[in-house]
Image 1 (cartoon, rainbow, N blue to C red):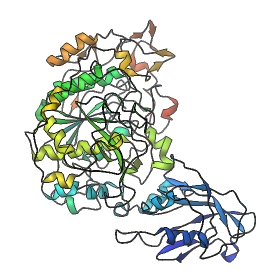
Image 2 (tube, rainbow, N blue to C red):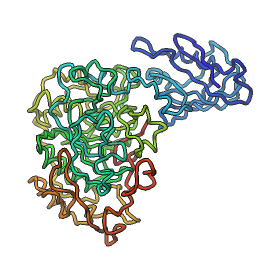
Image 3 (cartoon, rainbow, N blue to C red):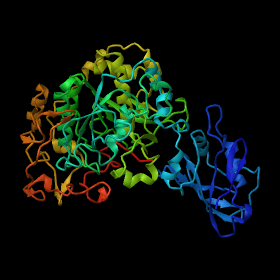
Image 4 (cartoon, rainbow, N blue to C red):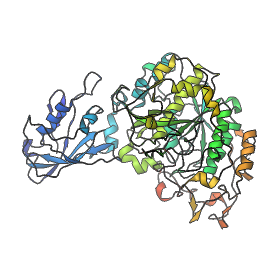
Length: 611
């Protein structure tokens, strides 16, 4: 049992010693929580919370961080009984190594200095023992500093909406795990489906849909718009889910399956398709979001993936890439491919620290860092961000205990989220300045940032400042940018994969071949991409990948014939014979039936954690 009483200035504390709740040797849960939601004018001070913890007998020794948890446990002692778990959202945790002690009100508890930082970021505190779904029953986005409501507010995105810029008329290409039209993306015309190039494309029940959950999450950040939102009233709407550019449209090109498995050849094919079809059926694709990166060490100057994205840039598409989630590495940096290409726009993740101001923001610890040769361009919100949920998707099943916020919302951290945020911001800027080039837009972002307390290797030019950017002058790119080399694209497809490989029945996809086992000549492909002719109808690199026409807002599909990798055939002679057909979201565990490419929590897709 847990009892709560009010203590200090609005702080509540658990008091398990009352009414005989606590007995020697008995474990109980304790909660320290806000009696009222914190506001900008008042956050609990270190002394206030230390007093509350001391009143229940908390004593801390030996911090233990659990990065996979959204709610972090703090075992301690309370009065005569064992205080089993004290939970702090956005905090840190301690293990108790001494016997229970009698509380002494007024005596300072022994808390690490780092706890002072955690205090500034607390929006609410609750016990991790309570299931996430029940905690979310009364979810209030206005009290969560990492909700899209507050994130768009403190970054200045809502100032753009108030000025009339909502991303209308701008299409954002999202190359990801697909998009499911859940609430927040269900408005007619919100999503246009390009070809499904994933290994799930042959199952009609899965085609284009997001069995992983990552793509829908990114689409929500970029351009989500709840059904209750009223055009013209977005800026003051605290109740509807709204992404950064709520009136932008998403072009979804699916490449990843439930566990995120995809091959770099699929990603390159998707990029090429976007470039060639950017103006189809009245589309206006001006932004491409790729929250994907391999650990390739191949120089960008020859890398085929970097080259493909550079062709999109040259075609007038602003390419936003996630830097990766490998954290800090001295000198060498940890930027992924293609974020290490200086011609593109590489985005790392910032952490709001749970406050409504950017003044105390930091670079997230997981955010990949640069080297003297290439740093991130900027950082943007990417820690504990709340976006749209796909029920029964892979991440929903695997990470629901830490990620689920409500029936429709999920929480995640990573440079994927940061890249999506910038893609939405780019749509706002392009609506305001329809003729802006990718290079000029890149300079506009770099010229309007807030410097954080971090080196340029970690933050680049700083955290994006959209409020300042709204009225800023868009200057032409510096002349020295012209001296930065473009990629030739003639390098190795295999080296572009890094350590990320697909397997099927123990057969590894490797070498210079695509997912159909067709030889891949990077020099020939680079020539075709430069001419904008790598796709002919539904044919790419000599194989039929998809259909060749539109059917409403969806590109037509195609049946794949059996192919082989290194002389070993796929299971069956037809892609439709694979294990995906016949599986349903609700009846199977996707992680148990999935292709063995890296999962989204790995290094290929830049989602760091679902918490």
